[in-house]
Length: 352
Ligand code: KG4
Ligand code: ZN
View 1: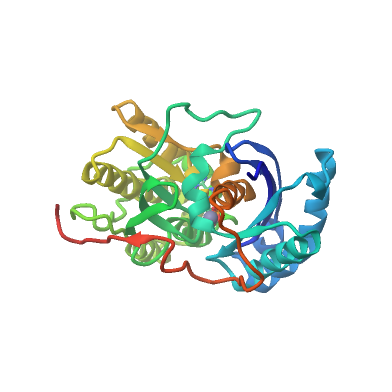
View 2: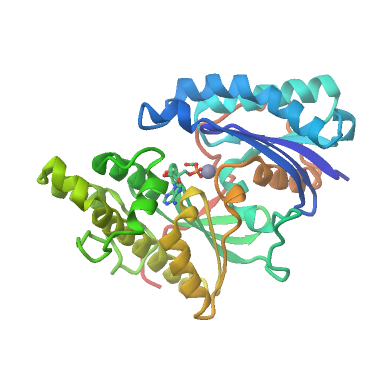
């Protein structure tokens, strides 16, 4: 029985380490953000991300153990994100955990990053306790800079992708739009901030595929439409209209996400919804999710520290699997994509 794992997440640009128990208790989590290093480039630069992971990771592991008066003796095993993600970034986490596992003679397991996001509603800590009776099955929307997909989460290890974006992820659309209006990096949070003092009805941006009875999404048309509009504006006009543009753009993204969530819940005959990933920090999305919960849905949005990329969710997925007698061997490598066995796929376009 594994009681405590040390987990590592380095799939993109956040270096995160956590200590997680088998009931989902996060003993602690430390994360080093690289936002500052990437902001000058207006996006994540893979080489810079991996170099920073290799600088930050060992000190973070050292820090979390010392902070909690623990040594490797107290750790039963390790979990590490090995897919999907940036190869250079994944390699740092995977090689570090393999080395620790080998030298300490303790088991380890590779975890799919997206599975981590799907299990975030079960994480708890001293400051946060999830709704006690919340359990499988549920619809989950994982929405971040790299992913925007809907899942039917039947149980631990039983996940079906039921909808996804055909092109850009919602967070990516926020980031690109933020560049167009000069709202800063990372874009989503800046757009959210500007939108607070803007008029969401001022510009009528398109909501793709909202009238179609399937769970596919698309954000590239919205991005192009914003680009066309903004390229006709003078730099002064963009500055004066920035807040209105942000509010209207944000409303279009959020409308699509909420509408497809509701459709997914209807198709799978559930009222249980989880929203996770970096974009779940969006205040308008949270407002609209709250409206859903007043209409009889149970909507769980984990605290931001477990929604953005974090090691706690990887530790929880990892310890559950270790406790099912699975473990990895030294052949485990990083993979840029998910493995075919990770998720069932049911992107049935037909109406049901
Ligand atoms: O999950 P995350 O930290 O990293 C991955 O992309 O995996 O998500 C980052 C994404 C970025 O695209 C960022 O712009 C977006 O989440 N984001 C937001 C907000 N905060 C972060 N998007 C909209 N509103 C926000 N408040
Ligand atoms: Zn993520």
